[in-house]
Length: 63
Image 1 (spheres, rainbow, N blue to C red):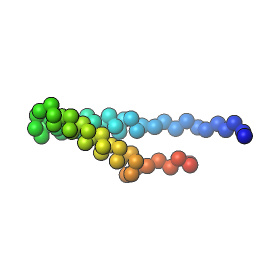
Image 2: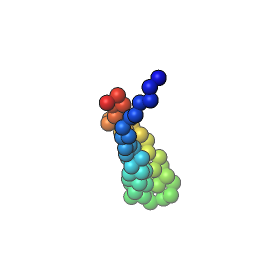
Image 3: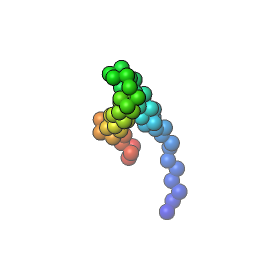
Image 4: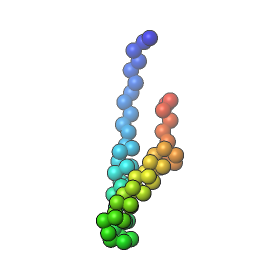
């Protein structure tokens, strides 16, 4: 087997996750204003970011 050098492609997936969690937390704070809703908003924001990264805007790993 040959040693193949692959070009490093920066992944900004973590940025999407952070933005999703923060947006969810802010939305939870605005909707109800309690700590429980902030946590629920953070979880929903993270799930939305996961969906976006995996289904809406997937990267082609072969190119």
